[in-house]
Length: 273
Image 1 (cartoon, rainbow, N blue to C red):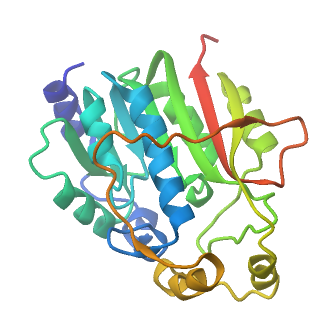
Image 2: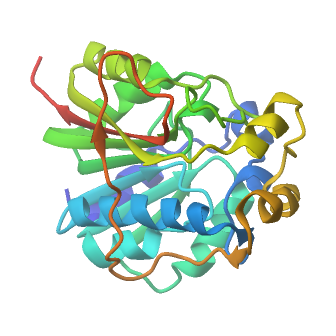
Image 3: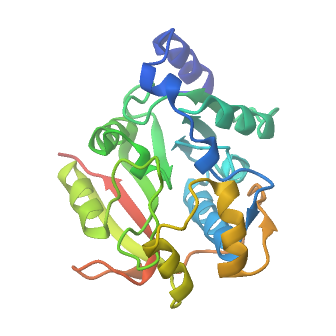
């Protein structure tokens, strides 16, 4: 289905009003925004996940669910044939839209991950980065992602590893997924999946103590001060625009998961049932 036809389908199927949960959702304060202060490791994780995705998106039709402020949409648009993206937060979409203005192959829309407003089998690649823990029903999202993927299409999920010793939960989370839980959920919904670990952590004694004492602030802005203490100098968060030489170093995980890796990378191929 071409870009124009797909956009027409979306206009026909989009509800005239969002559900109360979507309308009330506000994730701006827990979402990476351009210009925010960030540690070097945070920037590397942001760049790595979009470099990984852009390489796999080359020449394909891509959907990014929960795109946030659109930090990687331009990089995806430079690689992919088409990019559809959405978020439940209107302010995030406004920021993302401003960055993608004039890009004919990038389209934005407000929607929930559990109800993707697209026809069956219209994407080659679906992305969900650092957001599965916000979904009210992650299982329903996985079902929807499989529906909109073409045969042998792929779902890519990147998420914090809740088994990491320095893990700190978001105040807006619904559920965090371990490597083994995520793998089991993907396989149960008809995906041929693998979950790998990335960004092995150093000792982080001070951070672990702050987490244990519940001293980590709730918002991205408030976390900046503590990050200066934990991680050193801060840098402004950039949009990921062009090709990047940074790729995540992915390690296979054994059957017990990992407490060492900060991030989980899941690759799930749609198989025939």
